[in-house]
Image (cartoon, rainbow, N blue to C red; front, side, top):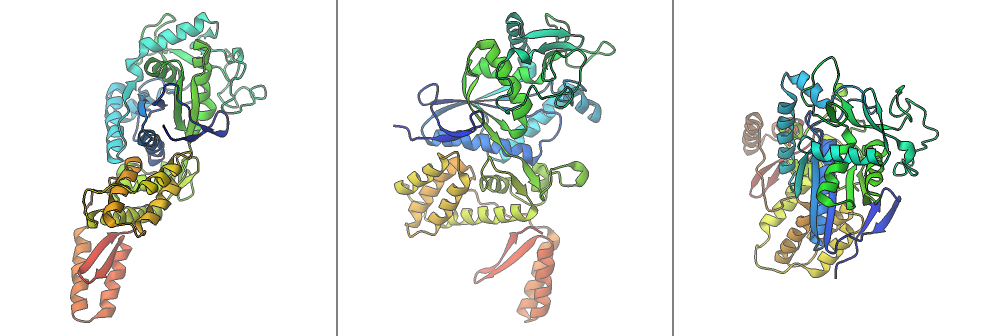
Length: 461
């Protein structure tokens, strides 16, 4: 018998007992990236969450069908269905085609997932590979009387949906034109959104297709509904994404999907909170914008970022600092040292510990409590071989690759300082030795002296 799992559903605003549509199978759809630029660490937090969610279900014995889209067309620079396509913007920025931009940043994104030990979804699906399905869905909505034409596209009439905006608790009647989606003389309602956009008449787009309404391209929202239902059916178990998707993107997905099928689109909606940097929203202009490569270039293991993310509830904001990533790396390395030092014998995991760990992760994916319990278990009197086997079971959910010890990449100038310090120590010149220790620490490394010699650790500065 499967254990009880509770997850917080954004739609109902409550923690609910999970009941799958199909027994022992979970169908999850995750909003993937718009591949026009490098993903930042805030974006990546959402995918660590969806991966951990999937691992939790698999840990509980479920089969998981996980679908993730790649937005490579149709995501405009404005939520008002105006402005340029982000793919076209990326192409202009880098003097490459939109297709080349999409291919390059899709590869970057997938490499980031690999570095963070995020499992690939069961199905990858690109918007440009599913134009036929998107056109078919728009035609279905048109047949149901949910659409109307303007000079720049086919729009969804949100006034036809009784509970439009319920996911975000939108005050639709009080929503003035321009307040959320911009002012348009041709929109019947300020919340109406584009299903299909016509190509500009004054120039040819790089990405455009024939449709019953004219040459153009799909709106951003229609792709997720079309692909989710294509691979997972009219009703899916769980839809995940960032909290920034609630008020517009996911709200519109619900409206168009349920209008087309007459069925509930997703039984549960799960959303990840924002990540800030040094207490502020990430922005390139303020210099606190980080990609995963930026973290790696500073000497941190990408999985230290995964560890840091898991120390916070996915629904709570997380503040990233160099100090916090440094502490996460030290904690991760300590766990790996324990695993490496403990005897690797054929031992059964501690059943009671597994049950306790499961209790935390099954309670709305409470990874902070699960990690706190892990550390408590590390210091327990349980035989080391059993602790090792048990913690490696925990790692099936945490995904930290605890059996992989990694050497710290120490710059040559830091190594030279360490050697100089060691000479001073041998000569009994302690003041000089301490001065060099301070210099080493100012460069982001710390020396720990043991009976077996000195050990260098990466720290934050």
